[in-house]
Image (cartoon, rainbow, N blue to C red; front, top):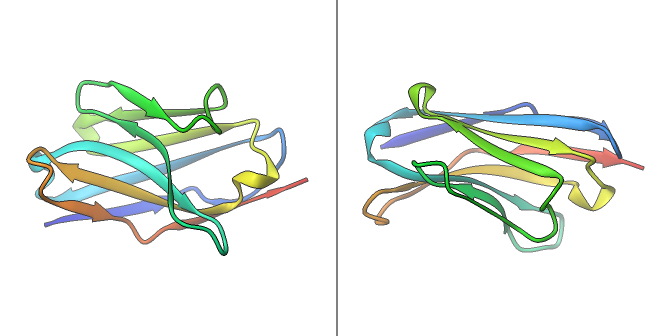
Length: 117
């Protein structure tokens, strides 16, 4: 089992910056891909960014050039640097981890990010 705990959410002004963190514990050795998803009220959960164990990244078009995902394998942590956030980025952000076999998917409890205009 893997447990994920997010931190760093809150209220930020549009054009500012915010950094989300997610720490994994438990059987972290099985984790391959880590990432961030978000869900706005009335909308489906959507991908924000992914990062592989080797550092390969993938971003949603809506955040490319503004958000940066990074990972510290020694600390079993993944981060999301949110630069120039927009009001439409307001959502609950969830940390995600996938096992190397792709068989197991883990989620954090979510952290609220609110971007004011």
